[in-house]
Length: 114
Length: 113
Image (cartoon, rainbow over all chains, first blue to last red):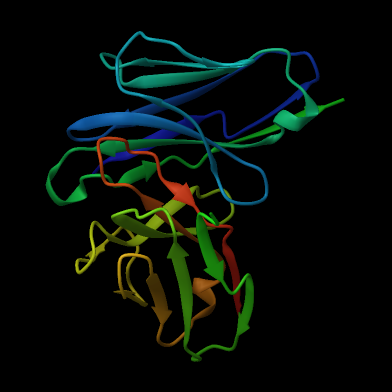
C-alpha cells in the first residue's frame, strides 16, 4: 500500500526561528513530490520536486528531495506569523490508472508565535 | 478566470438525505478529483476522473457516486448521507500533461446530523 508520512504532526515556534518539516514516502513508481500550504482554506501549491538533490527555493522557503532515501524536507527560515498553516506533502505515481493521482500525508500544523 | 469553483460552501444534512456537490473548472484541465479532509487526516481521495468520460475510485469511495458531466464539471453525490460523511470536501483539477500540480477549489463544509 502506498503511503506518505509527515513529521512532526505539529510544531510551535517563535517568529524568526528556522523550521524543518519532513516527508517520507513509499509509493510505487514514484514520479514527483509536491508541497502545499493550507491556511484554513484550499491548499495552495508551493513546490514540485522530481530530481534528487536539486533544491527548489522561493523566498524563505526551500525544499529538497532524496530519492535514494525516499524523503523530502521543507525548510522555512526567519519564520513569520503568516507562515502559520498546515503544510501538506503529496507524492505522485506513474503507475497505470493512477497516473496523476496524488497521495497525501496527514500534514504538519505549523504555528508561529509573534 | 475563476479557476476551480465549488457549490455550496456550507451544507447541513440530516442522516439519510441526499445531495450533490458541484465542481467546475475553467482552465481546460483534463483531470478532476474529489477529496475529503477530516481533522488531522490530510486529504483522502474519494473519486477521480482522468479525462472526460472516465471515472475511478480513490481511497474512500464508499457512500459516494460521481459524474463527469463534461470537461468542465465533476459532481459528487451522496445518496444517503451518514454522520461519518461530515467533512470538508475539496475538488481539484490538473491539466493532464507532465506537470502533476493540482489546483484546488475553496471547499464545501458538510455536516450530517
